[in-house]
Image (cartoon, helix red, strand yellow):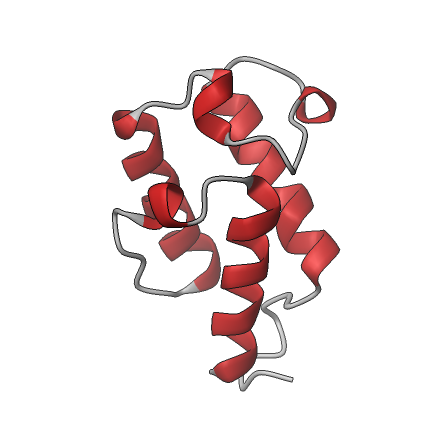
Length: 89
């Protein structure tokens, strides 16, 4: 477990949080966001993606590169990447 036990490193928890964040930017319900579909297909643009990086930094205390959404284009890929970063910390 990470040094900060208050930060969830469970993959499902991270994925659900990401789905909710993406859905809020796109004015959709989290259930409408398929974790395996690239978020760009839902209309997630670079402005929203940059804002999402800020949300992740605030929520998880990680420094996130603005290219995160392009390098990990689905919610599932982002969640897996974040869990790995959190677990390594």
